[in-house]
Image (cartoon, rainbow, N blue to C red; front, side):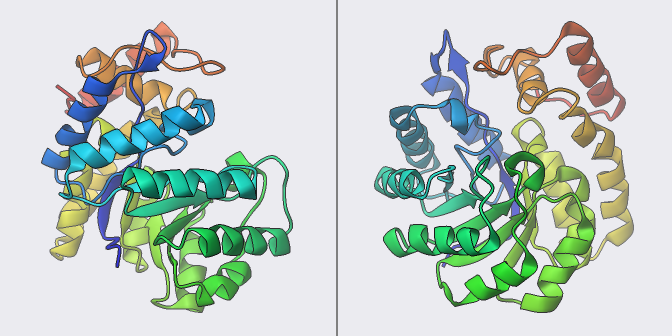
Length: 294
């Protein structure tokens, strides 16, 4: 069974002259594992998955799984706007060594709740790896309802939900309706502590690419019952979490990593590298919070 407990960085995909920068990706895997993360999530939104070819998608998952060497699980993004394509990427991720899948709601085509349910059932019937569903209506244009999630409770492969509606009420509703059936992970760094407080188990994190130890420390303090210390650390990091979205993700977090020499300053079109004022603002916020990616 896939253990979902702690911090899971949604890994960026480093590029060099437009191609995947394999040495930088391998170094990033080691860096975040050394920082205490509980698992790795390649090929999600933060990994610019929609700008990767299918071959690149499989290669990224393979590199991450090889470099992880079983130290932590690898949960590979495989969700797309097409059920058939999602099945293809899920099979490819399984062959590349993924331990589980992250399946975002199909985007742009805006399926009904019946369509969402049928989609997830079809993908997981074809590839029954332990899977975290990913609800982020701000990006997909569709909201996976609690009722639909509850109906999916009979699909053994569905083990968790990445809850990124931005509304902590939703996490509470899932836990109240579904109990321990699904592990709830925050999909927003800024809501990690609120989600933990109502029974969530961790976060799929953007910020942990740059500051894994600091993000992990909040969860550790909470687990140890040091509530005031966890709150203080969470609030110290809150401006940093917010700064990661001053421009489109993953631009700001890649800028932090690039400034520290961990990767080249590249994103793929249609994303553009953050402007100089944004990069300066992000760095100033990180400096004020006394966090460093070096």
